[in-house]
Image (spheres, rainbow over the protein chains, first blue to last red):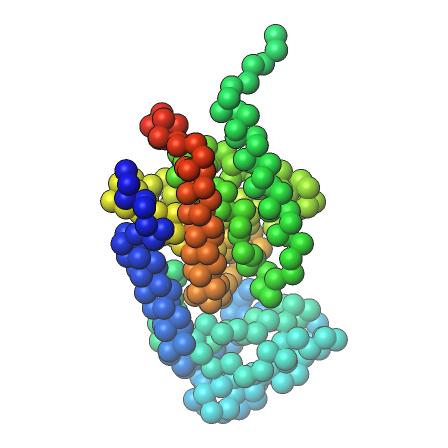
Length: 125
Length: 180
């Protein structure tokens, strides 16, 4: 019973070490995320376009609010014009890592980079 | 018929009040990241867990979420459900690892795990209720990296509190009949 003489026991340290390793692994997995090769454009939840990020170009997508423009350059993708007022999706900037996404609610548009494999951390199976 | 209360009821209410007070005070502290708090109220839960057992800890934890949300005014808001999910996930985890106490696991190790479980439960609830998109898991490693040291700190607070309590009134008797 006098094991709790120490504030931090060996078991505590093992527990903390294991958790730190798990969290560190998660961070490392995320920082080292593979670059995506394709991007998915959805309008209203339905697939509208599949973009190859290795083929530069500008794409026009028609949504309920109007036309959004999407630009692909050097394996990156971004929204360059949207029919909404706040332009939040534009501020999202360039996307290149698998899993990154930009959303335009007024135009019901969702842009997401797809990777070779979709799981980017230990929690996503 | 008057409902009678036991000594345990009184103890639970007292400790829950303490936890709620800390919870509410903490809610007033601005946080750089939503959902990230020092979690000092959980030090109370840890103390109760190691001194009085899992059942009492569950009471304190859930009462804190309920009463805390009523006072802050977040009852039945998304924040309340996130809080509840975090508490439930933590309680399940604590129930599972509490037997490790007999190989020396103390509040510091338990607190570290509890802190991560809180984040895990909250993110899970957020994924289901608030942001139904898998992108939310991108937050997990960062939040957990921040939560780990906070959990260890909470554990250290709990250890000190337990030592002081133990010096005043040894809880050996209470421990044996509360762990069942």
